[in-house]
Amino acid sequence: MKVVISGPQALNGTVAVSGAKNSATRVLAAALLSSGQITLRNFPLLLEDVKAKIKFMRMMGACIEENFASSEIELSASSISTDKIVDFDLPIRTTYLLAAGALAHNKKVKIPYPGGCKIGSRGYDLHLMVWKQLGCKVEEWPEYILVEGELTGSS
Image 1 (cartoon, rainbow, N blue to C red):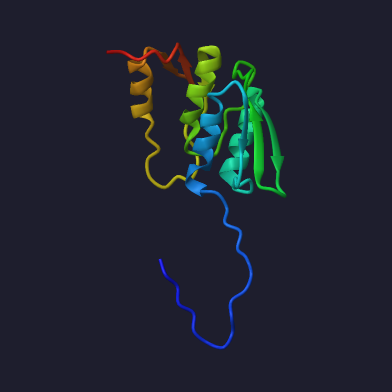
Image 2: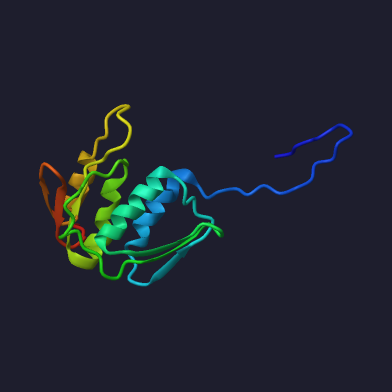
């Protein structure tokens, strides 16, 4: 891409570009797969979906430190569980992505139903089918989806 500026005033300065909005909650969910310390840089910490997912991940037991000055987040999910969570109201669409990390640590997870704006359908049936195909038991409860098992896959 090429930008041509013409005129008497020269451009000067810097622009800080935030991390990718649409991948932020997915990257957070992927970080749950690790039992080590994860550092995410240039992370969009002020997004409402990110704040909501961080809050829920903390309820799961993830240790999360946010550095707003450097737009970094440090995360450790070595001991996460959803057994003690009672509030499953999570206002974001990508709730089902939390399953893999919790299953990797505990072989059991209760995840909120997809939330967010009410524009269009929030289908999650494909995720249920995939979990079952990977050998998990899946139950839908009024407050959450219960997924149990190891993500072993099938041939």
